[in-house]
Length: 280
Image 1 (cartoon, rainbow, N blue to C red):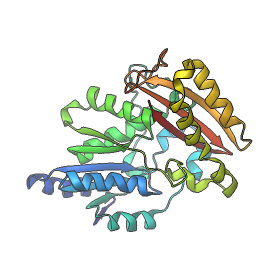
Image 2: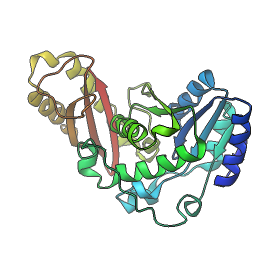
Image 3: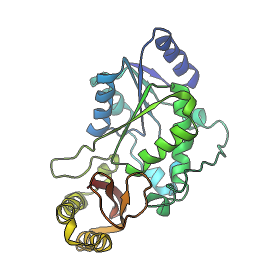
Image 4: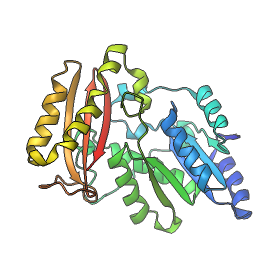
């Protein structure tokens, strides 16, 4: 596996593969890798000739400086995991490499950036767009892989790709959520959970599954309230939001239509913020 830390070196390496007609798959990450990330690598390995991953904790997408400071960083372990699954190139830049000067670009996503996560994480998706647009331009992949756990982020990246980066002709591939045996969605943030909070966290998915099964017995508003109340009954968990939205517009729906509707949730387990979703 090739390890590169500069944009110039990355582009040089990839250009050689492209000159040979190789198809490139790309997985951008913030490190602290888990099986969910590795499944994206494996998906690329099955579809593409060359698989590229990046590890970069992007400061512009953190609206909470303390969250940025605490975000887990495990570079040596991450490199070893990427080697084990056969990643071909890993790009690990510094902040100075990615942002030699302040990035003042502002993106408009047609309103989908202002709901759910956007309500509570001011500027988050603009920061995501800043870093993803840079990485897409440097790697110029044929396929880029993202986990659907970050449901709204995938919608943002699809919009970014279509409206700002269409000339790159990148195909966005959304991959299924990987879960622990107890149902908790795999996340780098899970490593920050103390044992008590970790034991409580699977209630999030358990509750979503329960009300997915019974959704016809409730209005959308009742369903969101029921999910919130049931999770909040556990004193270790605090729901920030539940929203049941149209898969395309991300607007709260009046009626659930199977195949077109998803329930999205953010929950604090102590100070650790967890997100999840379930499709109807």
